[in-house]
Image (tube, rainbow, N blue to C red; front, side, top):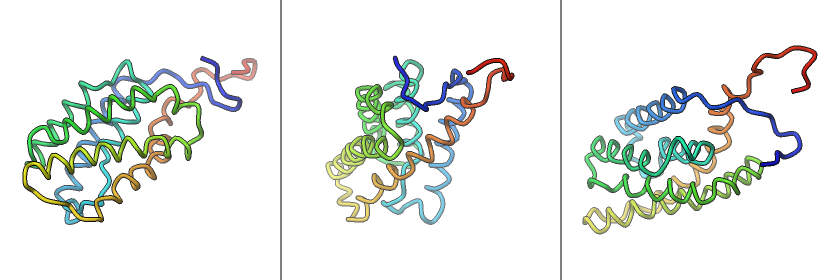
Length: 176
C-alpha cells in the first residue's frame, strides 16, 4: 500500500499495548458508569471508540469476535439485556473492518466523519434492543453520544498511535 505524502512510517503495534488499551477502555467505561454521569445517555462509549480504532488500524489482531466478547463484559457490568452491547460492538466491528482501508486514506477530521455512521448504527442497535425489551426511549440527549464519540476519534488516534511513532533506531545517516 502506498503512503500519502507526509505520513509517518509507524512501528508495528505492540499486542500488549493493544490489549492494555482495550482493558483500560473497559475500566474507563465501568468507572464512568459508576459515577453520577454514567447513567446519562449522552456519555460517549470509550470502549466503542477504542474497539473501532484498533479494528480499523489492526484488523488482523482485533476483530468482530473480540468486540463481541467485550460487549458481553459490558452487558454483565451494566446489568443490561445480555447481548445488547455485544451485538452493537460486533456490528461496529464488522462495519469497521469493511471500511478500514478507506478510512486510513483521510486526515483525522474526515476519519471522524467516516466513523460517525458506525457509532450511530451501534447506538441505534442498542436503542432498538432496549426498546424491544421494554425499557423505552432514552431521550433525545442519547443522540449526542455518537457525535461525542466521533469528536473523540482524533484524540484517540493521536494517543493510541503515539507509541508507534517513536524512532526505531535513529541516527543522522538514515533518512527514515
